[in-house]
Each structure stands twice: as C-alpha cells, then as structure tokens.
Amino acid sequence: MAAPNVFNTSTITSSTGKLAVTGSATAIVSNASSSGKVYMIKSLYISNIHATNTGTITVDVYDGATPYRIGLSISVPIQCTIVPIGTDAPVFLVEGDSLRLTANASSTFEAVCSYDILS
Image 1 (cartoon, rainbow, N blue to C red):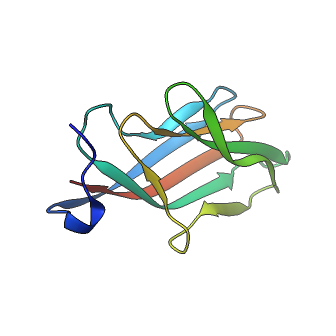
Image 2 (image 1 turned 90 degrees about the vertical axis):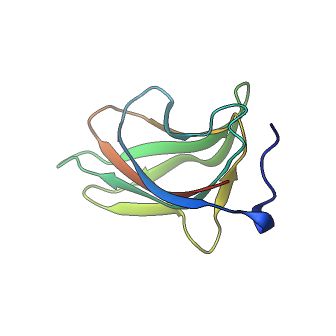
C-alpha cells in the first residue's frame, strides 16, 4: 500500500520515542514498509547527560539502504540539550524510513522524539 496523501489524512495518532543513544546507529522512530502511513517528526531533543564529557551526535534518515544526514557530528556541550528537528521544520518518514541517532560514545546522550502518525 502506498503512503497516504497527508492532506486527506483520516487519523492522526501522536506518540513519543525515547532512546539512550549508543555508538551504533539506532532508530528512535521507524515507519515499517507497507505501513500505509506517514510519520511526521515534530521535534527531536538530544541531551548530553554526562557530567564531564562533551560529545558529538549524528542524526540521519535511513531509507533501508542509505543514511541521509540531518546533522553530522554535532557537538553537544556537557549537560546541555539541542533540538535538531523542530516544529518549524518537520521531517516526514515515508514507508521504510527510520530516524536514527549515533553518538561518539555510549552513556553520553538521551533523546526524546515527538511525532504524529498520519493515516
């Protein structure tokens, strides 16, 4: 089934993804292939929870074969939060896409993602 026309959406379901980010690319939100849905990423908050280490993080949209980077090696100061995706510039995940995060070190970042599922 093809993803729906977002202007003719009959159902909107809001959700939140949460992730302790590691050194491997890991999805915080995934839209399954043939879901018949579009995921609208409204916001992504990434917090550096480490007491002494500044870290870097990469955010990408992965289509199952290729990562397309939204932010590459973004520096996040100690105990600070960044917002690489906000309501003023949402990201849409079509069928088969995932929003992934990769840190330069484990136990440094936590992420929270707010999104709507359109069907």
